[in-house]
Amino acid sequence: MTNRIPSQTLMKLQPAVAQNLKAIDETAEKAGLEPRLIMLEKLRASQINGCVFCVNMHSRDARKLGDHQERLDLVPVWREAPCFTARERSALEWTEALTLIAQDHVPDETYDAAKAPFTDAEFVGLTAAVIAINSWNRIAVPFRFEVPVRAA
Image (cartoon, rainbow, N blue to C red; front, side, top):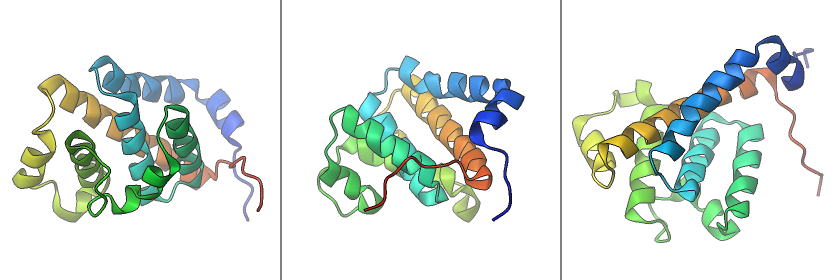
């Protein structure tokens, strides 16, 4: 494996990156979105992007917010799982559409379905949160942020 810049060093070299992404991410909270919904969005984007660091962190954070491991295990197959609310399903749909934007450039029907349960402010906040986690994934994956997980 190549010698990559450690995450702590990376953030010391460019602290504005973390500060600006945090500010973008906070838009979702300020828009009034539920913390558990935001965590599901972060988890799903990180799963799609293959970001082991963020999947680990946001799974742990979701459990701290009271989400159950069984539900978190079903996030990759949320369309088939009956345990997600309409708002969560819309948020997951929007997260996938933006994370995989090159596939179909977010058709109108996807936009309309995803936006339906949200106010304009909430939807913009959700969009900002998806942008932020995708940006974090694009930092953590290539720099191979270390995951503090013990072996089985």
